Image: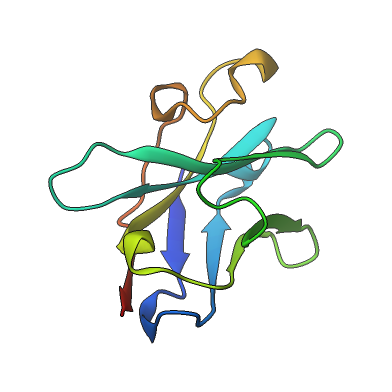
Length: 126
């Protein structure tokens, strides 16, 4: 069964921090790439960060570089997103998902990922 469950969202003031977690089923964890995505009201879903599980290489959206960190904890079977220096424009529903294609699909394109969970809401106030 393919399943992801996101958690850790909340409401913070600008400049604050949050750590999102994604619990994934065994099948999902075995995928060669996992990513974090977000969708704000009225906007399309966008890629935030992806991690290639073979070597833990990462790619970040320009808007979050230097502020967000994606990581995997194999012992806990979780994917995390550490978010620092949060801005009001980071407000969105955040999702994690596995890639549904090959390693070359491991880019910030939501169309390359699937098995979406319910997401976790992040709200940043100014």
